[in-house]
Image (cartoon, rainbow, N blue to C red; front, side, top):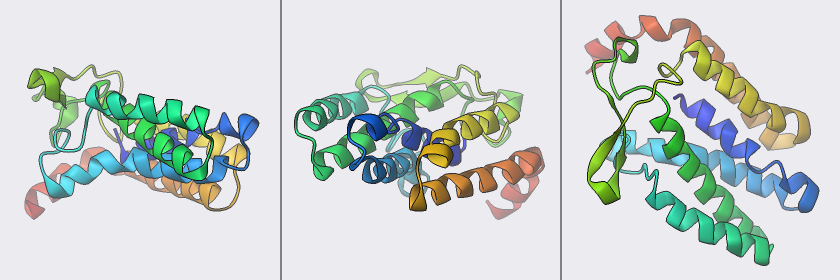
Length: 184
């Protein structure tokens, strides 16, 4: 899935704080946005969807952080929890998408995300057929709604930028592989 989808879902996950702890919601939303982006940094530092993607182990960090934030509502605990939950959800979302390949609509690589405790790759589910697909854009649009409707300032701006990047990317996604091949 597109990083924009992961980022805005990270924001959407924090929207309940607008009701229970509205003073903490904006900082949590920013942390959720960053947590949604974080796993994809493994594109730069290692094997994508393996180095920083933790579909199971991530929850071993996220769940205790979530409990701590529920018990002690401070900016620090809420930020850690939002970041960790968004990062864990990101890895799970990738398991629902396509394999890691240049032309995922061809389905030549069935491996979605690495499951570290088992030492194997989870198979792609293709619920979102490929990054930049219309399905993926729908995830971005729906995920961005809480940020656009209920937040203001930087959170709203980031969600709007995510949609502004995702929409044109979706339009050109299937035309990009030849350009990527020339670069690589």
